[in-house]
Length: 239
Image (cartoon, rainbow, N blue to C red):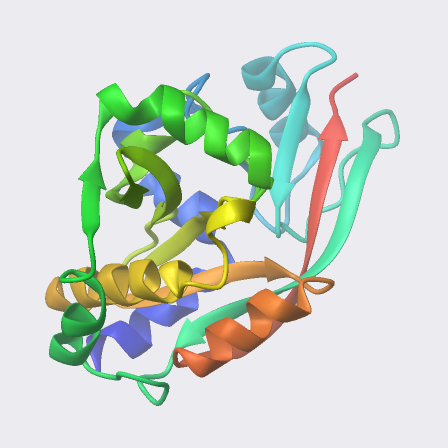
């Protein structure tokens, strides 16, 4: 299938997104690339990056700034200060979980109080992210794709959205629920709704999760995601 062939792009999801669907949100210099400020801090160089590639990325990111290399395996020069390294995994939707198939996912998600979020919702989205810490999310992150939410008496209590877009695939990210609203199945409904939208485009959903988040991994497996590969998320400070 086309989406299966496209899965090879998942080895470089940030670079593939910046070269393709997110090219309009990219800054590029030589073989280095990163997102525009306020969209994401993710950056990419080729796996065989040389000194010139790292110099180009440093020029793009700026002096003493964070370069979030995501799962890029390339090793930066010694004067790039390590900021973090987290063990994680990349999971690809298999279609074998609870409520599989685009119509089943849509029925499990879209009809359950799920609403589409837009620019006017950004302050609430940022507040929810600050309270729940699902991962990097900035004022313009919502421009990466569709973001969905669930409201309780008008208050945003859960959300999830689309982030990286390598060819043939869409990453589901920023899955989070306010502490007072947990246990109501909100995350599952949002993920199912997003899976339905991705499948309707003829693409395959995938996601990333840190290895220590056993609860999230169990949820994703129940919803049909299977581990494709282990990854290490790394960030560095430019010299």
